[in-house]
Image (cartoon, rainbow, N blue to C red; front, side):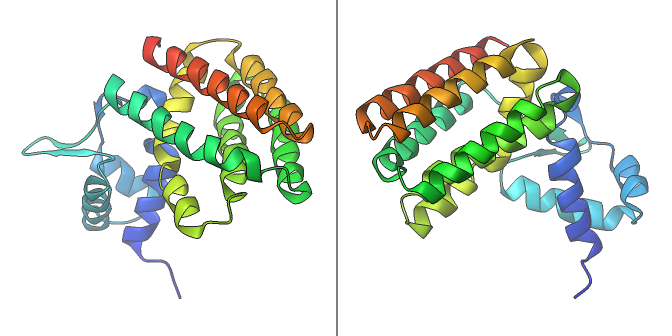
Length: 207
Protein backbone atom coordinates (compact mmCIF):
# COMPACT_ATOMS: atom_id res chain seq x y z
CA UNK A 1 0.00 0.00 0.00
CA UNK A 2 1.32 3.42 -0.95
CA UNK A 3 2.16 5.66 1.99
CA UNK A 4 -0.16 8.66 2.28
CA UNK A 5 1.08 12.24 2.10
CA UNK A 6 0.09 12.73 5.71
CA UNK A 7 2.13 9.74 6.84
CA UNK A 8 5.13 10.82 4.79
CA UNK A 9 5.03 14.25 6.40
CA UNK A 10 4.52 12.73 9.85
CA UNK A 11 7.65 10.57 9.49
CA UNK A 12 9.63 13.47 8.01
CA UNK A 13 8.72 15.77 10.88
CA UNK A 14 9.64 13.19 13.50
CA UNK A 15 12.89 12.26 11.77
CA UNK A 16 14.18 15.63 10.55
CA UNK A 17 12.37 18.48 12.33
CA UNK A 18 11.53 17.41 15.87
CA UNK A 19 15.07 16.11 16.38
CA UNK A 20 16.83 19.27 15.15
CA UNK A 21 18.21 21.16 18.18
CA UNK A 22 18.31 24.38 16.12
CA UNK A 23 14.52 24.27 15.70
CA UNK A 24 13.66 23.89 19.38
CA UNK A 25 11.62 26.91 20.45
CA UNK A 26 10.64 27.73 16.86
CA UNK A 27 7.44 27.60 14.83
CA UNK A 28 7.38 24.99 12.07
CA UNK A 29 7.16 26.48 8.57
CA UNK A 30 4.31 24.52 6.99
CA UNK A 31 5.06 25.61 3.42
CA UNK A 32 8.71 24.73 3.75
CA UNK A 33 7.83 21.27 5.03
CA UNK A 34 5.32 20.81 2.20
CA UNK A 35 7.98 21.75 -0.36
CA UNK A 36 10.56 19.44 1.18
CA UNK A 37 8.25 16.42 1.23
CA UNK A 38 6.55 17.26 -2.07
CA UNK A 39 2.96 17.59 -0.87
CA UNK A 40 0.35 20.31 -0.37
CA UNK A 41 -0.11 21.99 3.00
CA UNK A 42 -3.16 19.87 3.85
CA UNK A 43 -1.15 16.70 4.65
CA UNK A 44 1.25 18.85 6.64
CA UNK A 45 -1.57 20.15 8.83
CA UNK A 46 -2.95 16.63 9.24
CA UNK A 47 0.46 15.38 10.36
CA UNK A 48 0.81 18.28 12.79
CA UNK A 49 -2.55 17.39 14.31
CA UNK A 50 -1.24 13.87 14.91
CA UNK A 51 1.91 15.20 16.55
CA UNK A 52 -0.13 17.58 18.66
CA UNK A 53 -2.22 14.64 19.92
CA UNK A 54 1.06 13.01 20.98
CA UNK A 55 2.09 16.26 22.70
CA UNK A 56 5.18 16.56 20.50
CA UNK A 57 4.18 19.98 19.11
CA UNK A 58 1.88 22.74 20.34
CA UNK A 59 -0.72 24.20 17.98
CA UNK A 60 -1.03 27.93 18.63
CA UNK A 61 -4.07 29.73 17.10
CA UNK A 62 -3.10 32.02 14.21
CA UNK A 63 0.58 31.14 14.69
CA UNK A 64 0.90 27.48 13.76
CA UNK A 65 2.80 24.56 15.22
CA UNK A 66 5.32 25.42 17.92
CA UNK A 67 8.18 23.07 18.75
CA UNK A 68 8.50 23.73 22.45
CA UNK A 69 11.76 22.74 24.13
CA UNK A 70 11.29 20.00 26.70
CA UNK A 71 10.83 21.45 30.17
CA UNK A 72 12.95 20.46 33.15
CA UNK A 73 9.98 18.61 34.59
CA UNK A 74 9.41 16.66 31.36
CA UNK A 75 13.07 15.69 31.18
CA UNK A 76 13.12 14.64 34.82
CA UNK A 77 9.98 12.53 34.45
CA UNK A 78 11.36 10.93 31.29
CA UNK A 79 14.58 9.91 33.04
CA UNK A 80 12.68 8.66 36.10
CA UNK A 81 10.47 6.44 33.95
CA UNK A 82 13.46 5.15 32.02
CA UNK A 83 15.18 4.30 35.29
CA UNK A 84 12.22 2.28 36.55
CA UNK A 85 12.00 0.26 33.34
CA UNK A 86 15.72 -0.26 32.85
CA UNK A 87 16.44 -1.29 36.44
CA UNK A 88 13.55 -3.76 36.24
CA UNK A 89 15.05 -5.20 33.06
CA UNK A 90 18.64 -5.48 34.31
CA UNK A 91 18.40 -8.89 36.08
CA UNK A 92 16.85 -10.35 32.92
CA UNK A 93 19.35 -8.81 30.50
CA UNK A 94 22.13 -11.36 30.94
CA UNK A 95 20.88 -13.39 27.98
CA UNK A 96 23.63 -13.80 25.33
CA UNK A 97 21.36 -12.56 22.55
CA UNK A 98 20.42 -9.38 24.44
CA UNK A 99 24.03 -8.73 25.41
CA UNK A 100 25.05 -9.27 21.81
CA UNK A 101 22.60 -6.62 20.62
CA UNK A 102 23.79 -4.18 23.29
CA UNK A 103 27.44 -4.79 22.38
CA UNK A 104 26.62 -4.26 18.70
CA UNK A 105 24.90 -0.95 19.48
CA UNK A 106 27.87 0.17 21.57
CA UNK A 107 30.30 -0.81 18.81
CA UNK A 108 28.22 1.19 16.32
CA UNK A 109 28.31 4.20 18.67
CA UNK A 110 32.11 4.10 18.68
CA UNK A 111 31.99 4.52 14.89
CA UNK A 112 29.70 7.57 14.94
CA UNK A 113 30.93 9.69 17.83
CA UNK A 114 31.96 12.77 15.83
CA UNK A 115 29.84 15.91 16.47
CA UNK A 116 28.51 15.78 12.90
CA UNK A 117 27.18 12.27 13.56
CA UNK A 118 25.15 13.14 16.65
CA UNK A 119 21.87 11.87 15.21
CA UNK A 120 23.35 8.49 14.33
CA UNK A 121 24.98 8.33 17.77
CA UNK A 122 21.68 8.92 19.55
CA UNK A 123 19.91 6.40 17.31
CA UNK A 124 22.39 3.75 18.46
CA UNK A 125 21.98 4.96 22.04
CA UNK A 126 18.27 4.27 21.75
CA UNK A 127 19.00 0.86 20.23
CA UNK A 128 21.24 0.04 23.22
CA UNK A 129 18.63 0.88 25.83
CA UNK A 130 15.73 -0.62 23.89
CA UNK A 131 17.56 -3.96 23.74
CA UNK A 132 18.06 -3.79 27.51
CA UNK A 133 14.36 -3.27 28.17
CA UNK A 134 13.34 -5.91 25.64
CA UNK A 135 15.08 -8.45 27.88
CA UNK A 136 12.02 -8.37 30.13
CA UNK A 137 10.04 -10.31 27.54
CA UNK A 138 7.07 -8.09 28.34
CA UNK A 139 5.53 -6.71 25.14
CA UNK A 140 3.43 -4.07 26.88
CA UNK A 141 6.45 -2.78 28.77
CA UNK A 142 8.56 -2.75 25.59
CA UNK A 143 5.88 -0.80 23.72
CA UNK A 144 5.72 1.70 26.58
CA UNK A 145 9.49 2.18 26.39
CA UNK A 146 9.46 2.53 22.61
CA UNK A 147 6.78 5.19 23.02
CA UNK A 148 9.42 7.31 24.76
CA UNK A 149 11.72 7.09 21.75
CA UNK A 150 10.98 10.48 20.18
CA UNK A 151 11.41 12.34 23.45
CA UNK A 152 14.61 10.45 24.24
CA UNK A 153 16.10 11.32 20.87
CA UNK A 154 15.14 15.00 21.21
CA UNK A 155 16.61 15.33 24.70
CA UNK A 156 19.70 13.31 23.81
CA UNK A 157 20.50 15.31 20.69
CA UNK A 158 20.21 18.63 22.48
CA UNK A 159 22.66 17.44 25.16
CA UNK A 160 25.15 15.98 22.67
CA UNK A 161 25.09 19.07 20.46
CA UNK A 162 25.62 21.45 23.35
CA UNK A 163 28.17 19.51 25.42
CA UNK A 164 31.32 18.64 23.47
CA UNK A 165 32.77 15.30 24.49
CA UNK A 166 29.56 13.88 25.93
CA UNK A 167 29.78 10.98 23.49
CA UNK A 168 32.90 9.62 25.23
CA UNK A 169 31.13 9.73 28.57
CA UNK A 170 28.15 7.83 27.19
CA UNK A 171 30.43 5.16 25.73
CA UNK A 172 32.13 4.62 29.09
CA UNK A 173 28.81 4.51 30.94
CA UNK A 174 27.35 2.01 28.47
CA UNK A 175 30.44 -0.17 28.80
CA UNK A 176 30.02 -0.19 32.59
CA UNK A 177 26.45 -1.46 32.19
CA UNK A 178 27.55 -4.23 29.84
CA UNK A 179 30.48 -5.20 32.09
CA UNK A 180 28.14 -5.62 35.07
CA UNK A 181 25.64 -7.66 33.07
CA UNK A 182 28.35 -9.90 31.64
CA UNK A 183 29.61 -10.48 35.18
CA UNK A 184 26.12 -11.57 36.21
CA UNK A 185 25.97 -8.81 38.83
CA UNK A 186 22.45 -7.37 38.67
CA UNK A 187 23.06 -4.97 41.57
CA UNK A 188 26.13 -3.51 39.89
CA UNK A 189 24.19 -3.23 36.62
CA UNK A 190 21.40 -1.31 38.34
CA UNK A 191 23.95 1.03 39.90
CA UNK A 192 25.61 1.55 36.52
CA UNK A 193 22.21 2.33 34.98
CA UNK A 194 21.47 4.81 37.79
CA UNK A 195 24.87 6.48 37.34
CA UNK A 196 24.38 6.76 33.58
CA UNK A 197 20.86 8.16 33.81
CA UNK A 198 21.81 10.46 36.69
CA UNK A 199 24.62 11.98 34.63
CA UNK A 200 22.35 12.22 31.62
CA UNK A 201 19.69 14.05 33.62
CA UNK A 202 22.19 16.49 35.12
CA UNK A 203 23.55 17.35 31.67
CA UNK A 204 20.14 17.69 30.04
CA UNK A 205 18.94 20.02 32.79
CA UNK A 206 21.95 22.30 32.45
CA UNK A 207 22.34 22.48 28.64
